[in-house]
Image 1 (tube, protein in one colour):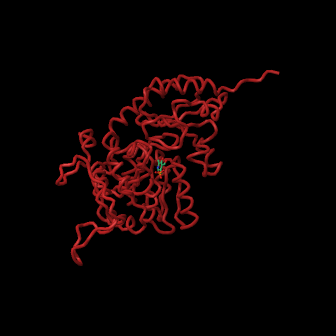
Image 2 (spheres, rainbow, N blue to C red):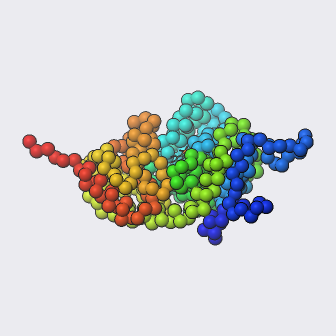
Image 3 (tube, rainbow, N blue to C red):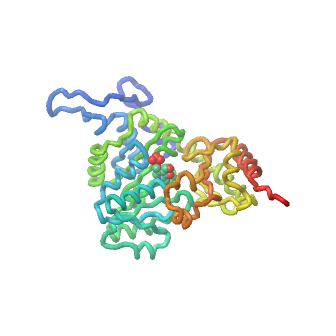
Amino acid sequence: MKSTQLAQISTSHDYTGATSNPIYLATAFQHEAVGHSTGFDYSRTKNPTRSHFEDAFARLEGGIASFATSSGMASIQLILNLFKPHDEILVSFDLYGGSYRLFDFYEQQYQLKFTYIDFNDLERVRASINEHTRALFIEPISNPQMQSVALEPIYEIAQEFRLLTIIDNTFLTPYLSTPLEDGADIVLHSATKYISGHNDVLAGVVTVKDETLAVQLGQFHNMIGATLSPFDSYLLVRGLKTLHLRMDRSIDNAKRLSQVLNENEAIDDVLYAGTTGMLSVRLNKAYNTREFLKHLEVCIFAESLGGTETFITFPYTQTHIDMPDEEKEKRGINEQLIRISVGIEDFEDINADILQALTKSKAVEVIV
Ligand code: PLP
């Protein structure tokens, strides 16, 4: 069912019989008279092409409304508008460096408080909740350590204490999980990643199932204006049509790669949750990460994930560059850690490339 839903997502039903949706570039829509509207007035508020994506995406997530934004960070910022100074949010200890950077800024600038915890430690979760706590912000598979969180008990705690549960589901997508149906209140994605799938769109999307939240976020979306362009909205619909095929292939490749790397003496640790196309590895100290990255020929040394190509990222100087060194150290984000977004190429090519780059990155002992 999900494959059919994705393959035929948002097929056009207009008078031409076109099988894909038109891109409405208009920023303004004509009114017949005062008080008469087609439902579209001004594209920041609502655009037909963006609505095609948002409506289809909300159905996919089991929500009632989605809001497409100009980046994943804009989605997170949209959500933060729900909170007031001195509100506190409990956050996954290990998470995307850009989210950490934004939270740090909001803490300094707007007196929101962010407390980082391991959501698998339920006692700690309960002990961290106080009268100011308003929400939980969770990466169910954390970036970059790939730790998975058991969400069921978290939803129960959130309900008990009337906290909003916000899930950054970027690594999983609605193909693999639909947190709103399980108990979450807000789900967001960096749609730049698997949703787009081709490393050519910067986008985010927030989805909710509650009417009040939908109205509030709709107002912020229009008011702030970091909305997604019609062309990018069209590309997201196009990307979604093959999400299931891309995810299946990438997960299959990632599983095989994690097994092979587990056996490799150059790798001290493979961090893999077993359910996604993302994994991280810690290189043994005898191997130089910077040399490894320099010698890649098939895999691409770049800072993103979820596309058709295998991307290898160096969190220490890329995704987590603005995290203070002591915080990086606590999370094991150091010179030996690399993150791999396994693409949909032939497994043999990815594997051979990583092996040859590892061989070339072994430090040569100088004998005097
Ligand atoms: N959330 C996660 C888990 C991410 O990995 C990223 C970006 O890498 C973001 C959010 C931010 O998304 P964007 O880069 O589209 O702003």
